[in-house]
Amino acid sequence: MTLELPYDESAQEPEDRSPWLRKIAWWVATVFVGGFAIAQGLTYGVTACLATLLFFALPDIARVIRLRKTTWVYAAVHAPWVPLVFVILTSLNPLFWAPLFTAALGWLTRTLLLKALRYGLPRLI
Image (cartoon, rainbow, N blue to C red; front, side):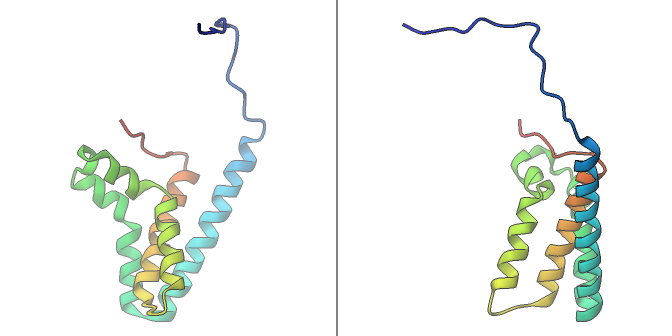
């Protein structure tokens, strides 16, 4: 025996009471991480700057090579938690290599920028 709840057609989705606050928070995070990525790139030299720029463009590179066919890889490239974990792991590694750290910061900056611009994250099918 199952219990079925009646469907209420008048039910609406809860509205976001502070969308401007969420947008400001995404922009603050983007500016902070972006500034930190630029500072670290300038501190550690040309290789770190190039790694930062390359990984900042990673979502565009994924789109150009038509990575949408493998949706889990495309979603991982655009998800903000993947570069965040990458930043944490590279900073805790005793064999610290600066270009790898700045590349992760550039990638995180790009995903935060996409979120701040309200592009959202890709949906998995």
